[in-house]
Length: 130
Image (cartoon, rainbow, N blue to C red; front, side, top):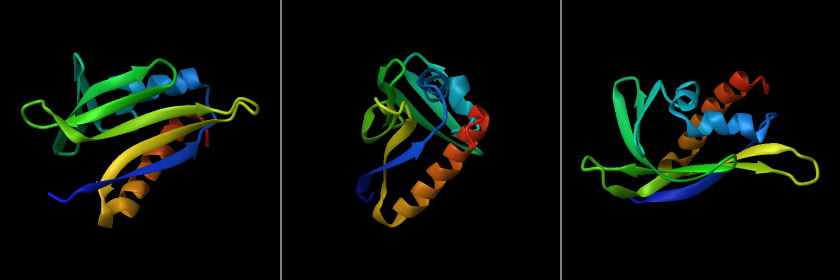
């Protein structure tokens, strides 16, 4: 398997951090914009897209601020890869943005960023932040 490269991408979002956090931290919130369906059992989340599913462990979360999901293998062991959704709020302007930290193979980074852009567009529509 090729080594994946870490990348970050940030999206301005017109939403309160509290509301945004509900959409990035709960199975019901994530299933509205991130995946077709999301199930959780304890700390494990199953993300379902069309006919594929991926499992991740909720590695860390800070209420109202960020969540980090670590991808796991078939034996539920952590892999080297994760994705993190981090809500940033500017102290002065109170502008809110969502920082995404993810990994992709070098030749797929542009495609991965495009996928995030599409998903965040869906999220913005849900939040009325268009």
